[in-house]
Image 1 (tube, rainbow, N blue to C red):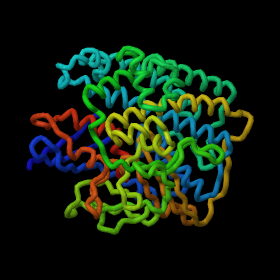
Image 2 (cartoon, helix red, strand yellow):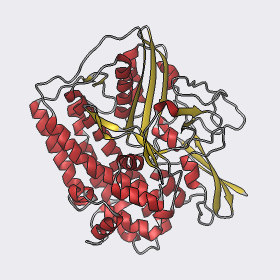
Image 3 (spheres, rainbow, N blue to C red):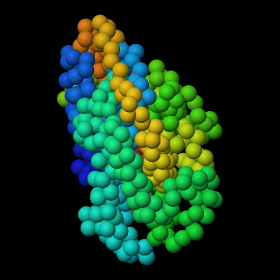
Image 4 (spheres, helix red, strand yellow):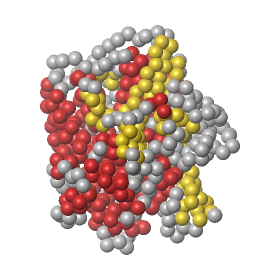
Length: 483
């Protein structure tokens, strides 16, 4: 038995180290180390309740709206405050703008450049892929960065700035949308749709959204050359490199649900597993285990009772990340989980065959982009500039609340307790906390640790591109992981 240490790993937000125990060329076990402790949960204690809306977006610069929105929902729950329809529409548009941007950026700048590495130089497809996706120099990066920047102009119209907007409030959005701004929103969405339909999919978004079976996906793929659109390029690489057999993890999936509008969510909440299907979500069954974390020894607790007390040395600990569990079960979260809980027929069939793997995770992200942009167009058209955007209410003397939503990378929850208008307790579980968790008291490895086990590496293995494909298929955001 030998050990390989990987890190610091680039092209992730924050710091990440991975330890691989090897038997020959096969990974027998993995330990994932979130190396950065943040302390936001302690920073917030004692602050005025609404200050959470200022502090929590600073958790991350690329998903600050997600953090802000979760905090606003937690405060709204504590205040028993409902946003008007316009407020819900604006919050959904802002969150979708950030989430789609993250999914889009991950594909073009974080995931696909690994296929342009010299490791694959002898493959027949390599010259075309390198020209398209090589880091910094590839034509896709230049096109995608321009499209990304223009798409994020939505955030200026809806929230005033990005990141760290302050417009998201417990009662809705503090920035009303004027009639001319609504027209500009629709124009920006149309421009982004055109980029997707020309470069990413080489097809109308509605065509992608109509695919319901693997046979239909394959027929669409073969209806044009493999270089017609970046989705076809990804599908070609998936077959060439057997990405369907790479990085399978728990096959237990979790979604908190997302994009509420008048009591209904576009993505419903729930869990999914093969042979069982969709199950309702009971948030009371969520706990965090600190057995392998550099946190004071304690039993697994629900976030309303959880503590974040760092310790410098602890036997058996190897990460700052806690181990969240649902009914004691390791869960995977992200775009694939959202699709399964929503009942996406194509992705459900594929997961029943291949499980949660590199192929299904990336395909789910791309299909979510195709589905959300038309939904954003409908939300923008539904805005009524002459109606209220935000409701207000006085803070109670004592209250508690939870804000649960889906960030681009998966399930994000904020739990808050208030005493005399100030925060007395605050706990956060981010998507990467779920996916990159360490072992719990039962010895269960986290989702990425399970996905890496059994992987065969090339000779040497220290810079294995296979490991990169697997960990990037989760799109980690390490600065969100530990608070």
